Length: 140
Image 1 (cartoon, rainbow, N blue to C red):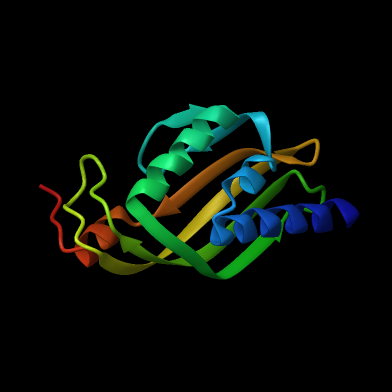
Image 2 (image 1 turned 45 degrees about the horizontal axis):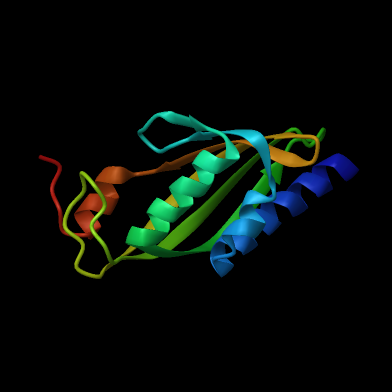
């Protein structure tokens, strides 16, 4: 049970760092070769690539995750989380509707692989069509 509890703690610290905007603390929880599966997008690999993703996100969005629920496998090698994103879209992101300070509330989830006490894979999911509808865009 210790492995499972360690994993639950690790994922909790990951989300605490996210909510606090502590990107370096988040990155420290990742393996060097972390795989990041973007919602409806490609897989990106590496901690530096993940840091660039965080910078892109931070440039366009301000988000807080609430109602975070985390589960982990007994051996601690896999975890999942669900949450509700409360956000503001403050700068237009490439290929998406124009940002005008719109707010949104969106359920989301993530899956994790863990290795040697760090996160080796993050796969995020949310409903892009719901987000687009909330910010007043259309999927043309």
